[in-house]
Length: 214
Ligand SMILES: C[S@@+](CC[C@H](N)C(=O)[O-])C[C@H]1O[C@@H](n2cnc3c(N)ncnc32)[C@H](O)[C@@H]1O
Image 1: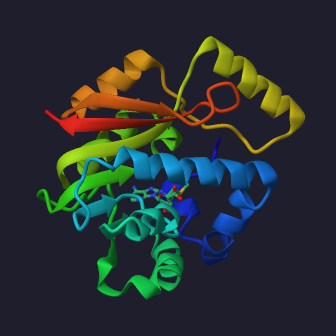
Image 2: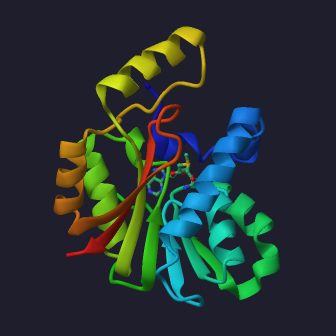
């Protein structure tokens, strides 16, 4: 992929189209449903009323699940345009949802300010050193668990990805990750894996990992 994920989503048309372009097809809807259910499951150990950092928050798609489950959410994103969509979408949650613009790689906000953190659908856009930079910033926001999502790299998933490309489907993740590199990513970001959920192992490379601060 030769586009820059730090810039791409700043475009207002891209932000307005984000949810419809990814999650309105049948497969998109199924995946969206499974992803939301998995995110709720990953945070079930955190007491309701806890504050969760959602970085990157994007259009608030997953923040909405956490708010509906009774958490407070503070979103971070490099794109004001994406956050504007999130503010409109989550307006009914009042002060339970707040957000701010932040570059999680270059200028991450300091200090643990939330009880947990979510980092979804972004790490696979960066090479490993960028992933470590991003996730270190996210881990620093949390006092306990950090839930991340990545695209798993394995022989079977490489075959699937080639097939998808051949069928002309949505471009696969730019930087999927092996299990060895997941360990390295977590270790360098000050985290350790305590749980893992595959969304649809035979159909998707997406994996959600629950990690604790070391
Ligand atoms: C594919 S979207 C995912 C949004 C949301 N987590 C979701 O699952 O729907 C990726 C998001 O990462 C944000 N982003 C990219 N680079 C960033 C950075 N350096 N710091 C903070 N956010 C960033 C983009 O603006 C975009 O909103």
